[in-house]
Length: 87
Image (cartoon, rainbow, N blue to C red; front, top):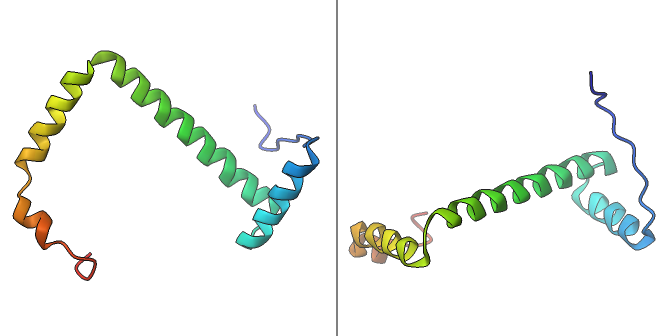
């Protein structure tokens, strides 16, 4: 069984200071901020891998064509009527 505790050292003093400052600015503990940063970092990597894999399946022209099909289905009048007040 994996332990829910993960210990690591941050040898880069500048990075350690940035982590401490950011956690303090966010009003959270270093552990809470680290959990958030790891989660966001992993999510970003997974998203990047998803799109890289997806892009390998299609050419640039196919992607542009699919985008234009979707774009053309949108009602331009609906897009023009959007305002920040309605969002």
